[in-house]
Length: 171
Figure 1 (cartoon, rainbow, N blue to C red):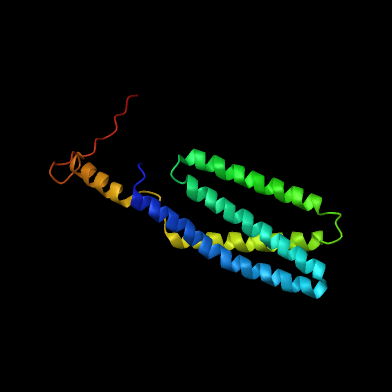
Figure 2 (figure 1 turned 135 degrees about the vertical axis):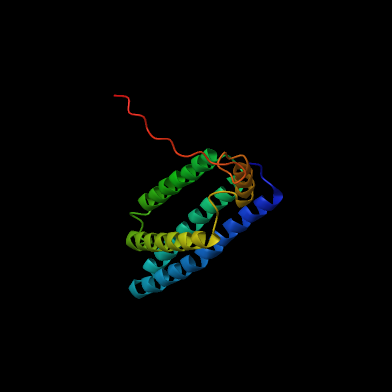
């Protein structure tokens, strides 16, 4: 399968639609986490902002990695996406580990914010993906191949079909 300019443009548009579908609701969820954190303390609000920023940064990074590698072989894209996922988990773990004993941040608020924002991002990314209506096959290629296979089929309308044969009993 060759990559045509139109196909690349539609792929870029698909990733832009995924970003547009995921980013605004996640920013709203992050703002809600910050406001809820303000009811507790400024430290919790600041920590919720850090958690929301981590989610937005890393999930956007994953979409960008997929966008720039979409023209590669599917196994290569999967390897790159899995590598970015591993880096996200490691950096998030290191960040939470590093912030566990600081006095200016609340680990609980960061964790809640990361969880809420990640769930919101994933939900709306799946919703945006469902709305893309990406075919599992190329409809142009499939109709051409289907038309060619109908004319060469032995059971086509031009040739008479043979009656079904009875199974032979060889006992």
